[in-house]
Image (cartoon, rainbow, N blue to C red):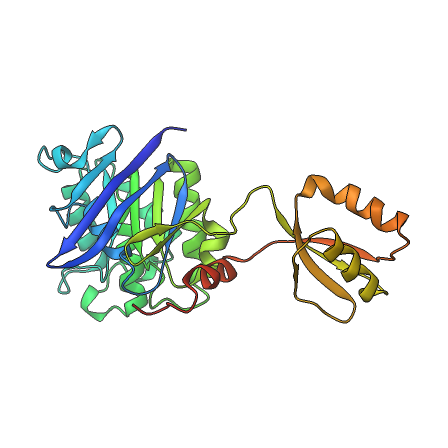
Length: 302
């Protein structure tokens, strides 16, 4: 798959404060990438730069193979970036349908029947004849998502798209985002405080903290966290420490440690040879929330 978005060494300084510090990442066609970090980490600034809302910065951003410094100067009829950043803006005296048709014309959408498909996917059919001024926050968010994907642009930027939505609506939004990524080949960059949702829908996660891209210190692809349950915890701990394993989460009948999965079969064989009993061996998967908390280490508000 080809890269749709490439952010290369982007730095943004406001006064004496460095908001973004040499940020780099990429998104491929049809890929959903989550941007995760505490408040003030720089997530919205990154998105505003990509969409052209913040034009002054150091570094380069490419959509397709074209630098956006040139792309936004030479405006084309069909938009190449759809976005929701902060609160979606609409004409409150117009209906949802009138707003979408207006933005569709601006976006270069020729087949207006696509609006019906998008509206139905987002469950907005019954709201299209109502004036947007009467919409709830959740309805405005869904209308914003509909507006952002008109013409199915190659790149979609979503900053907290589920803000204000009822819990029963969020799975439908998730399904919609996954569908346009996989079936329409749209590259999606999404931020959200609902980490469980990002974990379900995203192909990869980019962590950002104090304007820098952070790589988890323990993000070693050759290691996995393993839990062994035993009826003789003292002997198991003694054996593992003797073989230089660092132990975590000690319990009455189990212990956790990191190991290369390819070495696990040999380890269990050695346990058997040393007559150390065990009933289960589990390879544990660290949740996105656990990774987030480990990386930020209490720095959740900047």
